[in-house]
Image (tube, rainbow, N blue to C red; front, top):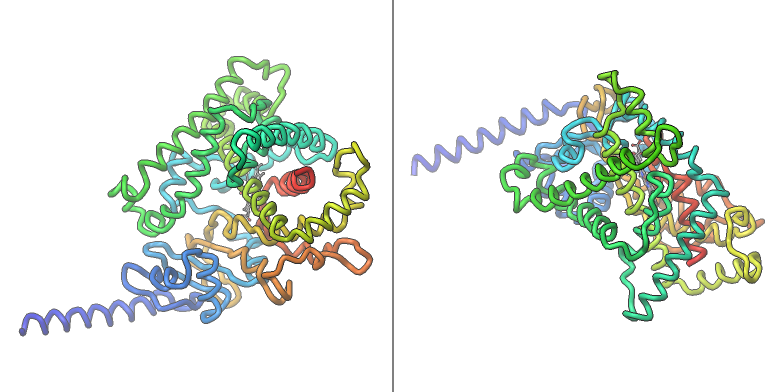
Length: 463
Ligand code: HEM
């Protein structure tokens, strides 16, 4: 009995000591729910919703739009109002990505600072600049070349869809657009164009899709307690995820080697990979050079995964909204019929004559919100946000979803209503459209925003 009482007293003493320490350590930090030893705020987050964006938004109603959360071992600040999200996306001390959070991301980057999405610092800046410039040189985002690419790929897509419908009678919408979108991008990135029935690329796209879906589990377990990833490789999903990521890395390396052996990249560069290989050759003697084989592998992997998944999911959701809202689909069709002549095809220069269609596409983008959190960033230094202290290394999580569901901006955010984007004279309300933050913001804004908007506009109208 005395032993039990002593243990109880010790536990109470330790808990009191822990709470006092905890309060002291996080003085001046943004408010947040009370933390528990070891788990931090995991239970409070999980009790709100299995979608972190919804859970954070709910908690922020009680604790404020800028909120400090501890997820196991991870210290994070989440931003849950349009103003705070906008401000932090543009903050000079919140530009770097975090690599410490997910062991999967570290493995994906061979444990180094590589690629475009999860890299940071000077290397990221140089590669981002190089990638945007080189892709532009090959026609990335330019109306004339995008029209041709999109139309050719959509021709293939419609043919594939017809055959599949005749043969199977049904199509699965999830991932339906992946290959078409990769083909549009891959013409510029690698010069390769796959057939819609290419088994190898279909398998790789499935692996990539699985990897992104499974990352939710990794986020829950190995992101909050990274040691679990190594300790329980099967249960934590490590084995499966490593298999997927290795196959995707190998595919990118094979693409690189194919170009090195078979293309005249030195004299006639015909794609992003060719120009990158030129850079590798030019800077081979410089040990500090950003242009290496591993970098190229990661840039390809980033473009492949970002290029296929986000736009494809947006298109799948958009199709769903159009199916549910048949009246809106009818209005879009009517406008297209009036503007596009019989036998003519839609091109980007017709966009300004299709205001209702443009408004419907904007509403699809707003509602689909496929990336509610941009890849997490981290504080590069101690800083104050409003009056709150944010320590160097803290994970920064702007909740983009709260912007697209804000009643102050949209009035009725849950309704699907393209008219909200139209002024009285039927022009687009560009000020309202500019409030969307689907592609993130600041220096890390999606590098393919214009390409994604263009392809989504054209693909939706053609389909
Ligand atoms: C509807 C389609 C898309 C959406 C919603 C989307 C969304 C985003 C978001 C939210 C970010 C993070 C921005 C931030 O941290 O502030 C991002 C970054 C990025 N996106 Fe996209 N994206 C789309 C399409 C694409 C496409 C087609 C590509 C391929 C070319 C692409 C490549 C990238 C890359 C490389 C980054 C990292 C940029 C950096 O950190 O510097 N995205 N995207």
